[in-house]
Length: 165
Image 1 (cartoon, rainbow, N blue to C red):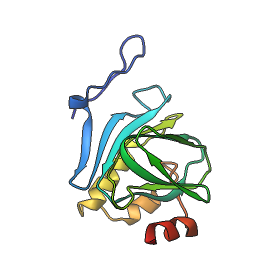
Image 2: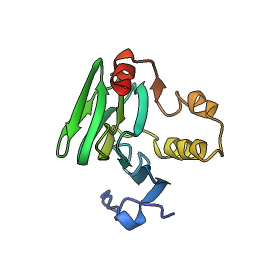
Image 3: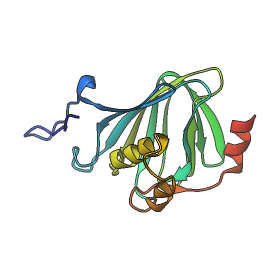
Image 4: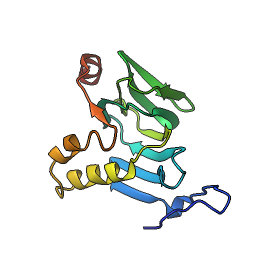
């Protein structure tokens, strides 16, 4: 794994070949720049999901907005009590404290650039999710880390209804 650093003037350039990739098959996460690398300005990653695959369960962040830019395909997103479908080229910003979730809708894969601003410690969270997915960590660790990663889970009847439709 390469460790990406800002240059002497603070610019961060991450080549795709140098970015860390987690997951394989139906869900993959490419890690570009975390809060440490950007001096807290942003955290950025790219998520690719096969059609119908869940991304993130309903949650909220207390300190950061989360931005979604759909590179290819479509993305089903919970934003508050609304469930919308964002398509290629669409952009969405979810403010702090707003419940949100995302997934690839049935019939369409999703390729999404996700940016947190200000930056959050996200890469260790994504690594934890990857370890849980591979049976190398207990799922309880995700719940136990909600404060550390500012990722607070909640129930959303609107999201459950949309994903079961």
